[in-house]
Amino acid sequence: MKVYHLSAECYPVAKVGGLADVVGALPKYQNQMGLQAAVVMPYYERKFVQENEWEVVFDGQSLLGIHRFFFEVLKEKTDKLGFELYLIKIPGLLDRENVYSYPDETEQFLAFQIAFLDWISWTHQSPDLIHCHDHHTGLVPFLLYHSKLYHRLAETPTILTIHNGQYHGAFSWGKLSLLPEIDMTKTGLLDWNGGINPLASAVKCCWRYTTVSPTYLEELTYRSNGMEYLFYMERAKGSGIINGIDTEVWNPKTDAMIAEKFSLRQLAAGKQKNKDVLCERFKLTNDKPLISFIGRLVGEKGADLLPAAIRQTIMAHPGGVNFIVLGAGEVKVQDELKALAVEFPEQFNVFIGYDEPLAHQVYAGSDFLLMPSRVEPCGLNQLYALRYGTVPIVRVTGGLKDTVIDYGDDGGYGIRFIQASVADIVHATGRAVEVYGNTPLIQLLRKRMMALDFSWDRSAKEYINLYESLKPAI
Ligand code: ADP
Image (tube, rainbow, N blue to C red; front, side, top):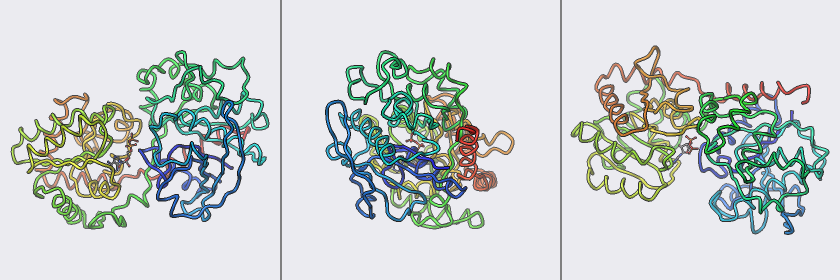
């Protein structure tokens, strides 16, 4: 079965968040299970692109409204990621460094989708399935089924995976003319709330959609930035599949990015050595419970709650708890965290920025990982934390609810709290301090966590089952 994954991100080519981790791993595991899965993504001027060898497999031209654009499809020569990787390069549109946040983002992703469809169309390819990820690729199902340009491919099944349903990629009807020739009687399938909404269009037109956790599937019906009613109506087409993690990249036994590799057998010593190195780097003492946060400093992640919650926890346990934050995002939160580090230099430190190796070290060296998310479609951080024997402290939302069992419940290993509020976080961090003080308990929780299996084998199989349920069309 030949499957194309379409995505704006793919690790290690270009990563902003969890989408990249999923698209960088799922196809590899699907291929190991006998599929022919490939990834197609926009070209970015990035290290991975510069350091690897590419072959131009196609070059052509197409139209974005009245503007002609030229594009190339480049293939990574060795399939080193475990799947065929294609980049679509469009001079002037898709040849930049960053993934998002350009003022012409609508045009960028629209041109990407048109170029992809033109490429497979003109080269007479007939993939068995096209798997779209998030709104950046959300117009593909509509264009496949309702543009006569792609009539030959109109029977191709499409699946949409929603990694983040808060972003829709909506733009105004004034830009309709940027789309290729479409069936104008079907424009209702593009519309949501008075605009062209790629995510809504994908939900309406795809054969099936998935979310990255079962709880998130339900949550979208009452919290999805204005698309609640659509998710409610289309609920029967949806299913939730928890992300796996790439257990080759995230493996404390082999991880070259951490100071001391460790397994279950040398767990306590391995964790402590990593904690020592981490604390030294952040100028903290290494004998206190260490609670860390990694992630985008945005409201979705509850990052605005961190400064007050950290301050109150430190005040409640004078000299008894340390914190580290690794992240970048809203300037106000960054500034508050920097001020907090000056106020409590012995108990708190922050690294503002994105640093992949440092993230590995923080997972390995921390005792607890705090995730006070307001929205968390799946969340990968808690899964990485589990793998490195770090107790997740999570707000019960989305994938956090599906993957973390409170240590007070049967077989539990984490700490759960209900509200995204400072009071709830402080209560939860208080429980963390207690857990840390009970050595046999924390050792037991670490062992339980490290024995869990969140590998891609399970999730990749679930996606394949979904693809196969679409037979006999495939
Ligand atoms: P989201 O995609 O919403 O940002 P996820 O939990 O799905 O959240 O994925 C976040 C990914 O990004 C994880 O791999 C996490 O380790 C990584 N990450 C987030 N912020 C940073 C940072 N500042 N430095 C390094 N890695 C980060």
